[in-house]
Amino acid sequence: MTPAGLSALVKLDANRDGVPNPYQVFSRQEWANLRAETPLTLSEEEIEQLRGLNERLSIDEVVEIYLPLARLMSLYVHATQELYRATGAFLGADRPKMPFIIGLGGSVAVGKSTTARVLKELLARTPGTPAVELVTTDGFLHPKAVLEREGLMERKGFPESYDVAALLRFLARIKAGERRVEAPVYSHFVYDILPDQKIVVDRPDILIVEGVNVLQTGRPPKDGKAIPFVSDYFDFSVFIDAAPLLAERWYVERFMKLRTTLFRDPGSYFHQYSKLSDEEAEATAQAIFRRINLPNLVENILPTRQRADLILVKGEDHLVEEVWLRKL
Image (cartoon, rainbow, N blue to C red; front, top):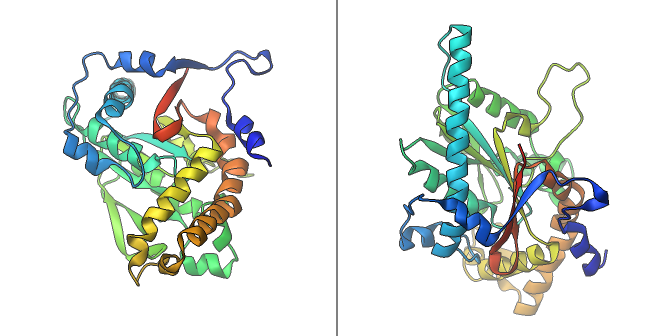
């Protein structure tokens, strides 16, 4: 596929084939105005600490994009809690607290982790100081030994590389209001699951689930007994959208920075890349993206974009240019 073809592929079209757009589209300024009186509760130092490698995250971006998003999420959480209490009153039974789950998806290198961290911190500082937890689906990748045995190392990040059954069990326990639910931990340093480490999620008010695969669908069970999709557990979902050419550029730029930092450690799985010349490293990063990440984006991630409740459309320098909010 040509670069021009890839750019056309991901462009959101508000009037495709004459079908009414299910989203309300906001320009950056229109969305920023929806902040209303929501206060900025993060300092410049905290914002810098939340910023991902090679990403631009300024106070303006937090104020204009993430504060309105946090305000909207707070309204959704409150409304869902009220509905849950009303249902409990109707049933005449006390029910355990049900966490509000936010799914956050998008391509590799578009800034999902930064968005998740910023949203977590902002929501945790809203009135009532709700307990907010963050889990990434990387922890539910099959261990490296399994991927190697199954010939899936070149498919890491594709739907088949995840233990979806384990992820569904985890979310089911969270939604059931269970205490101290464990999730696996993934290390980008060793490029594998850490078998001796776990994340413990203890009945939070809000859980953010971040990963490339969160909105992907699969084959429904033939017996109709199981919940088939991860997104079935979400109360709200966000997709971070960027042209593949931008995602590729950001991936290569991040790779080049890691080459002079994390990759230098002999214990890193990617240590071999620290010895490449600049030209070799850039070519290697581009090849990895086009061989693995781009096909995954086109085949699996991008088709799920319009399953999201909200889409953040990014342009140059990781800046959000438009926000698409699904109409109720």
